Length: 345
Image (cartoon, rainbow, N blue to C red; front, top):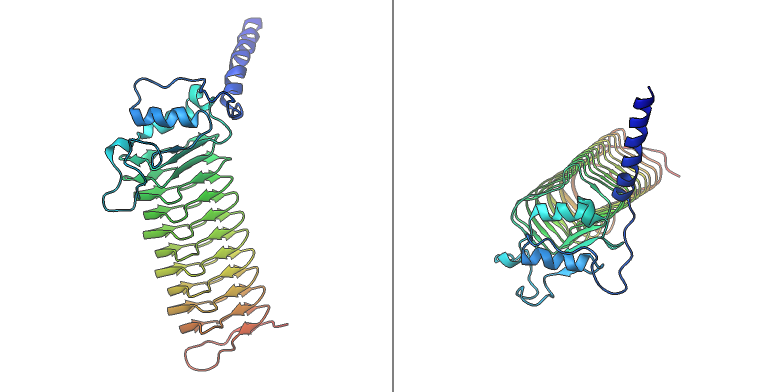
């Protein structure tokens, strides 16, 4: 019995410093501008360039560093040169291996203008630092399935071919993907703790956000272009903003819950929209926009106003069983429009 207790105490004592190192807070930016952890000699030249910069709190920007062909656009037909290729294993090493992770500063890993030729694979990873892969080219997608982090992740300005998979991911701060291009994006059952920003972005295939939870705002504005969006049973804790965007196919918001307003104004273009049993906590605003197919609002509840002014255009609207607590503007009567049931004030 005494031996068993001794072994248990020994294991706990050994595990404690390991856990402390694994959960150590980010380091301050070194005053002397020197990295305490040297590069791995097996890393490529460009990987060494990334480490010596992020280790001291700097952005590793290939667009500004001499020898990498200048300021290049990852969305151009020529893409990015081989000299900028980073391996997924390198990224995983500096983010997850304690030797390197414990040396990262409060600014995390910030990389601009990189090229990944294989899937960036961080499935099930627990990330302790910000990760920014901006203006980069990911030729075989990214896998963040069930990844967890209390920090920010950004793909602003990047081009992601293949699949971006964040199914079940838990990102407790922002997920920023502004002015990016995606072949296909899957955020099924993901949880975003603050803002999910897709402003100005393009998704060529399905954008699957079925059952997503966003604690603050979901932003998809600014001339963003989507082929098809699934927001069935999604919960948005702030506002959902699709102003000035285009959805060429189905926008399915069946049973969605938006705690604040849903903005779909300013020349936004839609085909078919499903709002069956949706609940909008603020206003629903279509001012100046167009829906060329069916606008199905069967059983919708809008806690403020439903606005359809400024030359908004609609082909067919179903408001059967709708409950509009505020005003419905304009009032629709005649062929093609079903009468709503409203509680106007």
